[in-house]
Structures are given as C-alpha cells and as structure tokens.
Image 1 (cartoon, rainbow, N blue to C red):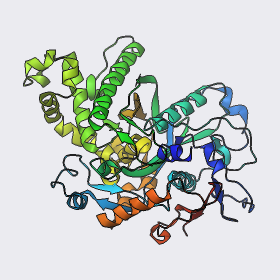
Image 2: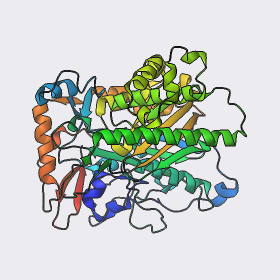
Image 3: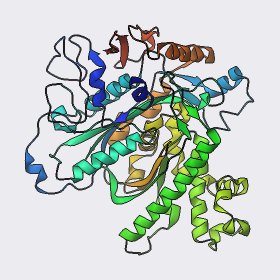
Image 4: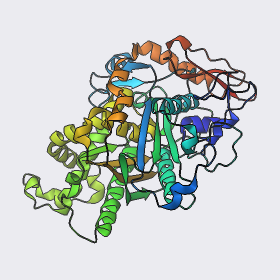
Amino acid sequence: MDTLLEAHCTAVVCCYFAQFIRPQANKPAFPTNRPFQSSAIFLLSPFFSPIESLSKMASRPQNIGIKAIEIYFPSQYVEQSELETFDGVSAGKYTIGLGQTKMAFCDDREDIYSFALTVTSNLLKKYNVDPNSIGRLELFGDNTNIEGVDTVNACYGGTNAFFNTVNWIESSAWDGRDAIVVAGDIALYAKGNARPTGGAGAVAMLVGPNAPVVLEPGLRGTYMQHAYDFYKPDLTSEYPYVDGHYSVNCYTKALDAAYREYNKREAKLSNGDAAPKAGLDRFDYLAFHAPTCKLVQKSYARLLYHDYLADADSSVFAEVAPELRDMDYEKSLTDKVVEKTFMALTKKKFQERVNPSIQVATLCGNMYCGSVWGGVASLLSHVDAATLSGKRIGVFSYGSGLAASFLSFRINGDVTPLAKVLDIPARLEARRKVAPETYDSMCDLRKQAHLQKGYAPKGDASTIAPGTYYLEHIDEMFKRSYSVKA
C-alpha cells in the first residue's frame, strides 16, 4: 500500500500518512504554538480542528473555488538536451518531439509524503492560514471529528479530490470552514523511451467560498472507461507499465468525450441560448493535464477540430481540406493531416492562451495527478493579474485507467497575492542543474530504496532547499521519520 500511494498520492490530503509519518521530537510538522510531544504521531487527514461558529452556514456558500495555491518541485533538474546526448538519441527528440526542456526529480531523500508535507506547510505559512479555519485537513491526532479518505486514481485523483471538496462545501455537511486539497506525484520510469517523460512536484490548494478563482458551478463534462493504457500491477517496482501510443489515443478520446459533454451541459444550463463566444473562444486561457507539452499543443488543436465539425462553413476554416469534415472518427484520432492542419490554425492562440499554463510542465516535467493543477498555478504566475481579471479558464484533467473531466473557472477577484506567493519563475531559476549521470545515479538510489524497511536514505540532504521536508529513516515497521531542512 505504501508503494501504491507513493506512486499516485492525491488527496484531500491523505490520512494514510498517519500510518507512516513520525516527526522528529520537538520539531513541529506545521507552524503552531503547540509543540509536539516526542511520541506524537503526525496525522495528516481530511478534516482539521474544532468547528467554528455555525453562523456561516445560515446562507449557502457562493463563488466556491481556489482561495490560495502553492506549488512544490524538487531543487534539482536535468536538462533534456543533455539527456538526449546521454541516452544516445537524436537531438530534439525530447526537447522538440516531447516539448520538454528540463525535468525535476528527487533521490531517496524525498517521497510523495515529504512533498505533501512541504507544500501544505508552505501553503499555511505563506498565506498565513489559521489551521482552525480548515475543515478538511487534520494536523493533530487529538481531533477525531473528521471525514474523508485518500483519493488514489492515477493522474485524475487530485481532480476527484477537488470535486469532493467542492461537493462538501455545497452540502448540508459543510461546517463553514475552508478545505485544503493536495495533489502530487513522482513520475519515474525505467530506462528507455518513457524516462524523459518523468517529473516530480505537488500542488496544495485552499478551497472555499468567495474565492478569486471560481469553479463555474454545475458546468463540467466527464468521461470514464476501463483501459490498460498506464498502470502499476507490479508493486515491487516504482515503475509503471505503459502502452504509449494507446495511452495517447485514450487521452484524445477522453478529451473529445469530456469536451462534448461539457458543451452539452453548458447548452442545457443556458437553455440553448447561444453563448457570446462559441467554441474555443469561450475560454481566454486553458490548462491541460500534461504528460508531455507536445501532447498539450496537439490537444488544444483537437478542440478547434471540434469547432470545425460543428461549423465547417465558417470562414475560419476556409482553407481546411473538405474531406476532413467526413473523416471516420477512429481515423481522425491518429490522422496526421488533421493534427497538422489544426495545430497550424491554433499556433498563435496556443502561445497566448495555453503556453502560460505549461511553463511548469516544460521545466519540471509530468507531476501526474498534480500536473493539471500545476498548470493552473503556472497560468496564475505567468499572466499579469490585471489581464486575468474576469477571464475564463478551461481545464482538462485526465488520469489513466481511465477518468477525465473538462471543467472551467472564472477569475472573480484579484489574484495578485496568489501570483506573488507562487513566484514560480524565480523559484524555477533558483534550482540547480545536475548532469545526466547524476540524475541516473539518483534514480538508482530510488530503485534501491523501494519497499525497504530499516533503511536510512543515502541521498545528500545538503542539496535540499531550506524549509523542505525530507526522509530521515524508515524503521522495521515501515514507519517513516522526517525532518525539515533548516
């Protein structure tokens, strides 16, 4: 189970941590005026502290969404261009073919639990969040008035946790407090073609009413299907089984289906009235789950293909080959003419509307279930707050196996404080570059550490950034002890 969660940890953050995490004596896991007892077990589970006044519940909450957001990625990266040389592949295979520039990673000193501890601690500190104001995250083991369990579902788990949290706030069970959702992962593959599509990171979001980034209520499309596109049947290994071409096919089908359902829902909610802007122009910006940034570019183009099928006679499509209109659906999924035609038509708008949301993915790689939320954070950090004001953001979330949703947000307030806290460009620049040989040896350390007990990590803790949680020891009962880098 440890392996499973480390492979795909998402949550409303995970009560499963209680089984494995023991802080060091007198070292609080989060900022607090109550010191830990030396024997205290750290419990990180989906409901926080005593209930506040119920007066907030007198009226139903409005404008539910993201009130604050924080991101974490490891302090080192490898250049994809150097990895191309190291792997003996042609120049541009990773940087152009995949659209990846750098890849974040960690050795055996960090894991998904330390990621979640770090990003949640930073969220609380940087936004000065009172733990007593949180209704869906637990600090101490002395509060049993909690609900919720881990959400473990490949790259979709964080989105499912977000939906669950919004549902809680909208429900009669809501007690007036905010919630925290954490989504993160370490994407690591065996040596070979898939390894450069890895990455690592986590995102924590404060979710509640009166948010500046508002989830558009009742407006989303979802698609789910059984598929063996990417899965982890062998828990003795950290590496997944991946059918790359099939997985891309599944992603595209899911995008098509979820987007169609979103369109149907929007039409129903508007009573069939035509929107002021149709198709892709409804969205000022978009964020996608990003296995690779090249797939994101192709996916944005795919949405314009939907616009074409809905209105092929529009002047926008005057130069599109007419035979594409009646192409068999299955063929269209892999047809290069379709792909290249609509990538060309969307090239300019992709740079304006999507590129800001893939800056983290370009420079960190795939965060799995944190990927799409890293895209939202990237967008908030790379577009001026005044420009974002009042804008609409389309979001596509995908998880292998498979589950997918298309949803949307509206910027309903000043997001300057969020962008200031995120400070993503400066934080990315502050990382250290390591050679591919070092990256390779760090991957080997993780392989050696997998499923070990009575284990002391071998990675160099001095390379970890201050304020970051890192693994100190795994005892004979698989319980993990962590410290915070001073």
